[in-house]
Length: 309
Image (cartoon, rainbow, N blue to C red; front, top):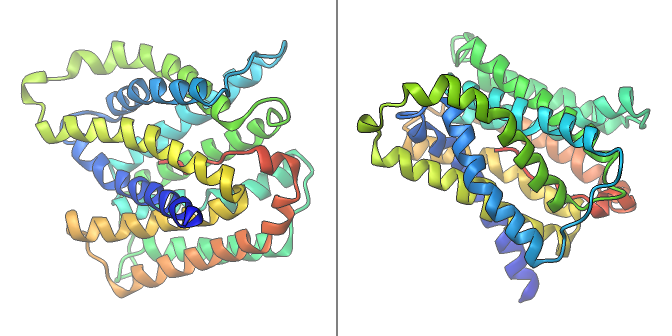
């Protein structure tokens, strides 16, 4: 029974995270991307630090690690949320979720060049298969892009930010737990984004024209997308292990696609459905094949990997 509730909690976190791609659209009706980033971080930071304090996971910084935290936060959440939020304002929720779901495939490639880690054949095959699926998703039935090219490039900028963050975070995992890292990266990212928000976005907000649905969307993104869902997933990581729990992350683009179809009435032609299946196939091939190696790694046992949404 305990295992059932653990699996249920992890699955529920993925459902809530998948829905965030749709909820963003409602927030974007009244607020620009920078304002959305600022607000969701402002709401989520207290949740993360409270959870860290209650679970005894607060730690002290080691001398010399400050610079790594500063650079890590620059990649994510700053660059990641910048690319994701502006990209989501230009492409469909389904396209955005599918592109973001390829992050686990690009991390081993970056680790091969920057950390000299081995790159397996299954990593390469999984990357090729999933990238082919992404192409199918972003291409329309007539062979045209099913979205703004700038938006697609911005989503890949988000992928770049997440990969850079992961590479830097790996060097900190021997000394810090994942919750502590996430709480501080969110805080530093909030510090980065605040001057931009106050100088360029805050003066443009017409509070009289703000829709109630947009306010609730911001609350959802902060409380669930960057707060409660992370806590639920953290429990799953602790009980199931990082590799097994991360397999559930493949539910995120599926939930995003279904929710977009039902709520936003996004078109779901056969080609897009086939592309989603191909992407997920490549992800599963890469993740499941390398599960044993990750579970045997001390770093991966410590790591809490949060889907970036």
